[in-house]
Structures are given as structure tokens and as C-alpha cells.
Amino acid sequence: MTAPRQIEFRELPKPAAGKGMLLLRISRIGVCGSDIHVYHGKHPYTKYPVVQGHEVSGYVEQAGEGVVGFAPGDLVTIMPQVVCGTCYPCRTGQYNICESLKVMGFQTTGAASEYFAVDADKCLKLPAGVGPDEAAMIEPLSVAVHAVSRAGNVAGKSIVVYGAGPIGNLVAQAARGLGAARVLVTDTSDHRLGVASVSGIAHRVNPAREDLGKRLSEVFGADGADMAFECVGIEATMSQAVALARKGSLIVVVGVFGEKPRVDLGLVQDRELSLVGTLMYREADYRLAIELALSKVIALEPLMSAHFPFDRYLDAYRFIEESKDKSMKVFIDLS
Image (cartoon, rainbow, N blue to C red):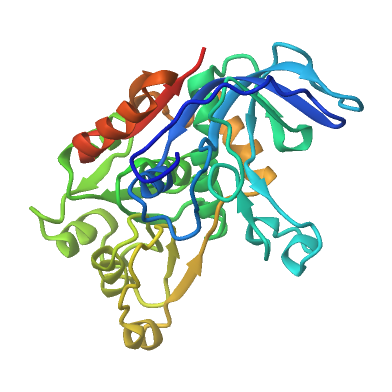
């Protein structure tokens, strides 16, 4: 992507797998909301030109010197974080919030190419039963798994998820899959609520047409929800989450805010609410995401909206732009 709304295809030499690296033949690239921010020229941490592609799956073409545990033909996915390994977060296992964090496809080269060479320790092999589409969705599912982990043990808990887009849907599914007793998802898009229904989320509400507070009481009773996840990234839903939170409860901030929201911190203080941030994922989240996908605890297929061939990359962005809330997960196919 050389500028907003502009993509160029360039013929480059086929890379080689250096020491400790894998050469991958890329199969699928998922397009996410952050990619769309780059397409619109609104991503605050990305400069042009940039090769995108961070939600990916591919097959091992070649293993470099010293690489063990991988063989040609293995289907893998990539953990796209590039971290320093020396700052305090990295030294304490919190490398997802590395002080110098870079992400493939945003601050460093992504995988939108036929072949991609990457460090083997950033790759995870997918077991039999997981195909390239599902493998490319492990990254967003890992975002959801990590977000749920930030709330602690959700077994037996009552949970409200604000936003039924891809991440909100996966957060709701992950919470349910990890033992939550009741999960309610909200959205102003009936289409996305329909996808949530097909995904197995039993409780749904459109606050543009229904009284959200009343619906919360119907689902969770007088005690309300134990925790909430804001997965939209706009002031309106953040305000809803704070205003409707039970006293002493937890709100996990998952959505990426393009504009700074005004939050009623008086309510946060008075009700002893806990606001918790979440960013990306760690390897343990990836491994749990793979386990959930393999066991079919998570329904990924209902989120798959469309496929575009590699040479129609720009058409995929236009489709997402024109479809708006009718689009969930769009893939670029290379094989």
C-alpha cells in the first residue's frame, strides 16, 4: 500500500529461509479493522509504503538451519509481533506490550506476498482438522482469548459484550467456551446480531430498538452482569458500559478508539468499577485459540463473509467499505 486507497503489486526475488527461519507459501490473509484504518489513511502508527498482512496462514516451503519441529507442507499461522526482548514488559513475559512493539503489516513488513520468510519462533503449526481459513482466524481469536483472560476466571460468570463485530463475536464465543454462564452481546446491526445467533450466542440486543437496561435485567436479573467487554471503540458504547455496570464490576476495554472518548470517571469512582485494558496476545493465547478452534467450541465459519484472489486485494477493501456492517471477515486467497 503506497498511499491511502492505493495498492501496487511488485515482482520480488523469492526469499530464502535463513538460519532459524521458515519460508512460507502464504495461503490466506484476513483483513481486519486495523487494515481498513491504513486503507483510509487513519492508522496513527503506520507509514507508507507498507506491505500489509498480519492475519495469515501458510504452508512451510523450506525450513532454515537449526529449525526443528516443522516440515515442508505443515500449515502454520504467524504471531506478528516484533518485540525488543529487553524492556521491562518483555523481561516479565508481557511482550505483547513491549515498549518498542512493532506489528507485521503496520510498522514492519507483513505477509501479503506469495512467499514470506519469518522467524520460526513466530510460527505455530496447526493440527489436522484446521484448514487455512480457520488458521488465518487464529490471530483475531487470540485477541479475544487474551481479552477474556484479562478478566480472570470467567467460569460461571454473567457477561455483556458491547459490539458484535468480528472481535466482539469472538470475545462472546471465547467467554462462553471458557465457561461463562450467560453471555449477552449488543449491536445496532441486526446482521451482526444474526451472525451472533448462528454462532451460538443465545442472548442478543439491538439498543437502537430496545431498552438496553431492561434487556440486561431480563437476562442477568437484579444482580446484573459480573463483567463487560467494550469491543467497539467509540464513546457511546464506552458510556453505556460504565453507566450500566453493576457496582464493583469489571469492564475490559477491547475496542480500539480512533477518537478520545469522554468517560464518566465519577461513576467509575463512585461504583468502584475496574477498567482493564487489553492489547493483542501472547503465545499461550494462540495455543488456547487453536485448541478452541480445533474442538469446535468456537464457531468460525459464520464469520467468514467473502474471499478475493490476491490480484483483487483492492476490491476486498472496497467490498468491506461498501458492505459496512454486512461484512465480518474477508479473506485474500493466494492458494
